[in-house]
Amino acid sequence: MSKGKRYTDALGRYDRQRLYTPGEAIDLVKSLAGAGFDETIELAVRLGVDPRRADQIVRGSLSLPAGTGRTQRVAVFASGEAAAEARAAGADVVGADDLVARIEKEGFLEFDVAIATPDLMAQVGRLGRVLGPRGLMPNPKTGTVTTDVGRAVVEFRGGRVEYRTDRVGNVHVPIGKASFDRAQLLENFRAVIDELLRVKPAAAKGRYIRSTTVSSTMGPGVKVDPTNVRVTDEELAATA
Image (tube, rainbow, N blue to C red; front, side, top):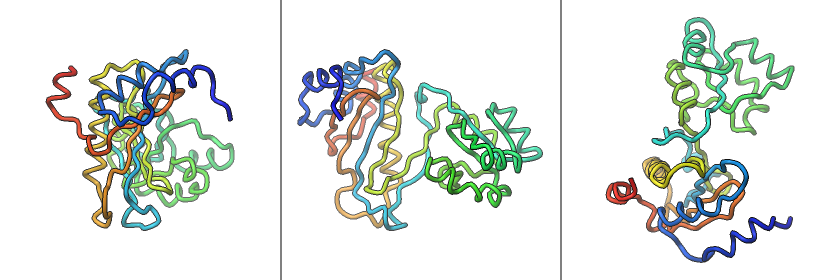
């Protein structure tokens, strides 16, 4: 598939082989984001893990300090007091068997995150073939199976994101919008890298962070030096 003129022009505005610092990469990506909408800035990290082995799957969720720039639509599988708590916290849709049936029979999928209380996971499990491939299946490892649904709704609506290695060990995480300032994007970048280092599997051998790239929705990827991905307090302070 051929690339558009804007994309091709962007490729000629920087050294595609150079490995940049996180701050330099963010500056470049912001300058290259020229679409007619507020593009999402994404961080892609190739990890030195084998996702085929259960003990090397990297998966979880984290709250981005500066948020994501968009409000996530949250669906909650809960009943009784937990359902009332979810509604009070701002969940977009709340239900139990009725919500399961709506997804099964009507194909309802107008949400970005699904949260469930543990007691409803037996029913939600029936939706595995629908929610699983879309990355919407609630899971305790990502904080989306919980008894504290109110807190989970607030966090995911406000800037909590999920991450998981794909079949070749890549992790893709949105770290904000092109309209964010440099400090906000750098702060979110640091949060993601720190989280990935924190959850490094004990079974992972050799270099853990193999490659790192920052890009916007419609723009090309800018490579970050994988040996220099840690953002220091001093760098953040100088940016602010």
